[in-house]
Length: 192
Length: 192
Image (cartoon, rainbow over all chains, first blue to last red; front, side, top):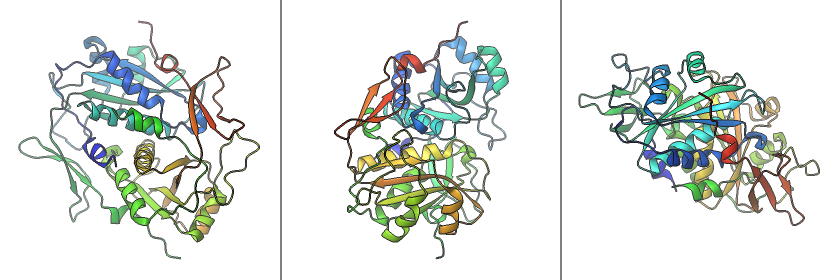
């Protein structure tokens, strides 16, 4: 079972920014995405890679970080991602992609964990601004941005409290706590 | 790297139907989905399990199989899935889920491969009919059906031919061939 790898693959938002990630590593991760299933095997996803200071600096300000941590505006300089994989949808191949990007992103994140890296799938993206600054053609829909780096935070999975609050939170020592719904809550039994 | 597992996790459509899959195994697989990332950590996905002949018989006719194989109407009796995990979106928690179901489904499929099983994510579903026959409440959106079983077909990954055709096809001995786009095609380079 890959349960240990799945368990260790957590959304991470603070990194050792000085740890660089090579283009070769990014390509290995994209290859995991490439080999995932695709609806009708159309394979409409395209990937834009960023691992240099200048392009990373263009990508970073377009991203929304950890909406529930109101006091925290995102990782500070020195703790920012070392690389990004921007997942695009190629409208010339297929419009309104619903499942492919999640499959691809999860393969990338699992692969990153296996390499001692970590990341975060970010859907809160200023897409217009990112498109403009990177000159992304209209043909491509910006589906998801995956931030990657060497992890610098401790993440703890836990059960939901009695109030059912799903918001992640940080403890005094900076540990990031993620409440997960139980099996009992997510497996539906239908009355016959 | 998990590249070997990713590579072996292929969409499979013919199974040893007599091989049963226990509820415990389905719950293990759902647990992999449960531990995946979720947008805003809302965890809106719910799961409906089927591994008994009667319920499997209700689910099967609602599914569309392998659209490119015009001659083949889906697996015959004896080669049908032994189980299904139906991924639902709980509208009371979140509407219009875009990424979570792909993450969850991929964790399930990777886990199934690790157990010597295989499956197929099916989006071509007669949702109204399935909802009616299983009495799925309106609160739940039917996002995806994952068919599972012990695999009974050989699947070959290959490169796209010069015509760029992405349609999978079957050879004379029943081998299922899946053309995949190359890295060069899917990694985008933008002109500065």
